[in-house]
Amino acid sequence: MAGHSKWANIQHRKGRQDAARSKLFSKLAKEITVAAKMGDPDPDKNPRLRLAVKEAKSNSCPKDVIDRAIKKAIGGDAENYEEIRYEGYGPNGIALVVEAMTDNRNRTASNVRSYFTKSGGDMGQTGSVSFMFDRVGEIMYPLSAGDADTVMEAAIEAGADDVETDEDGHWIYCADTALNEVSQALEATLGESETAKLIWKPQAPTEVTDLETAQKLMKLIDTLEDDDDVQNVTGNFDLSDAVAAQL
Image (cartoon, rainbow, N blue to C red; front, top):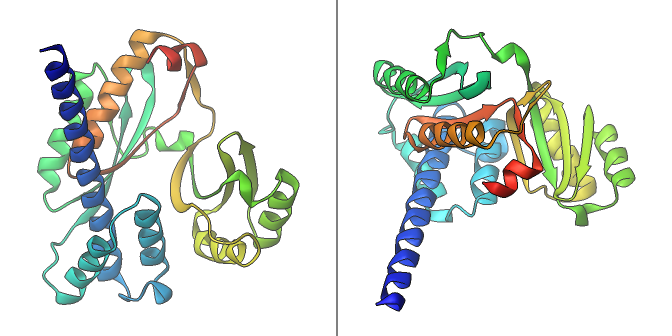
């Protein structure tokens, strides 16, 4: 029975991972459809679509899912999604920016508000926390792309504003309006990046050193990200090494 129980737990965990993967692909496909519907269905002629397809590929989204999402927009049978940003404070006053795409504003607003409330947080008005973040383009390269100096030189030449290098790779930042141009310029010198997307970059992240706060915060973020209408969740926090290890 012990072996059976272990197998059951593995199956359950795999089932949750598969479900999360399926939900991620669905959200990536939604962004592709919206991008294709708003502009040209050819990624080479539509910067937003090009970046959406790149993000999908970086998350191992199947080609047929990407193709179907574009065809859905071309066929004219895609739902009309509205892009909305929600802002608020989670546990311990951590600022959160929630980006959503919805065909029912009332449903999504009600759900997001309830998630904040149940976590002990508070959903605020638009602009209530976004001033603590910068809207920028983020391009990520693996360490194999070159040493820090080489990548920094290429980034500056391409028009980027800043580069951060750590054990996970090179993180290149640029103005949000220049993401497509900088990304293409970097490809000419460093090859294709792993990701290129718009993000909300915290100006001064708060370090979370309390395990209980971290657990409540992670639960809120997981709940938000589990909502079909929510595309991205960003917070102005860093987990301390000790808390991250405990989580």
